[in-house]
Length: 414
Image (cartoon, rainbow, N blue to C red; front, side, top):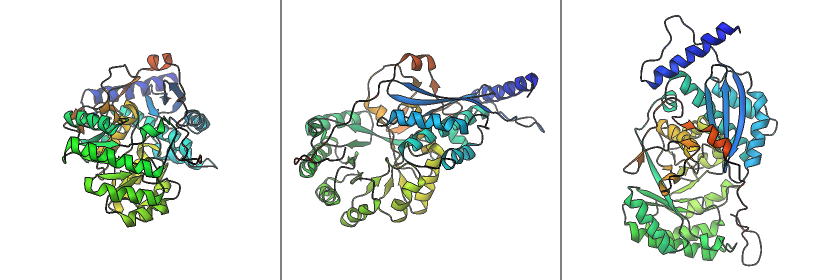
């Protein structure tokens, strides 16, 4: 491509993006073709505790994605580097093609590193496409299936009383759903005992329910810690306190074991944050093991894959409650998907727990209104990425998670 053609292409896309940001209709003149872009650079950026991705194009449009996985950050970075050759020189608008290429051109597929890497690529490509057309990503996904998304916050007290106080604080801010798990105090001493954990979960549940009343929905998080018989015992004892759902009642490796729990409780169940593609969700969905699906946009393959997981769930009358422990970038991608997907019930929003004002590499978080997140405006994901700040912050790999043992010294799950 000659220099003049290159200049024309950059000017064309910048004009569209600029018009879109101003709310002006941004369409090519009759007979004018939108020139194709090419990906020129793909770069992982590790900063703080996060793993981001920057994709540049020859049209001057840059997109950002997130591959943060606090348990395997270097694996996520390595997989991103492995996938770069499949992206350079390609048309960034071919999002589905590049998703398939990143997944299916690898002989060994699946798993958390692949899921995180493809998630970041997918987000960055949607960000580019939205900026090219001057539209928010949710508009490109089919428009608003809802005008706002209900969110839930967390409490993490070391005692039932502390957790109850935090729950009152969240409710006072207008949050109408709260997730909690107990056994933080046992984590501190590297202990997990099923009986003790069930007892503490019920203690916390009773205290929080008393503190916030019946109008706040409570999500009982189990973190995949229990064997099926103990998850059943927890559900039996939890029923009088009316939790909205029980999240990750058992480990994720064998979804069929959920059938035991499903058969023994009327309470809604949810799972999915440790699934990394539509194929990981398939068995759980078609067998009706849970009521709610919990894909994470930073882990499951991105916005594109979350849409497909949702569509499969929709056919079986299941709703999504997207898992999201990300900062503003992953939160933005989650929100755009949740706004456009018809069967979304709630969205995890850890940012509602914080009162800090520390500058973030990515901004902004969505605005909240009466417990709902409002759409982010602006083209693409609707966020800004401060590269100077990102590159000034050294990456700090998170420390080891608790090395949990049972009372007899055998390994237990974190």
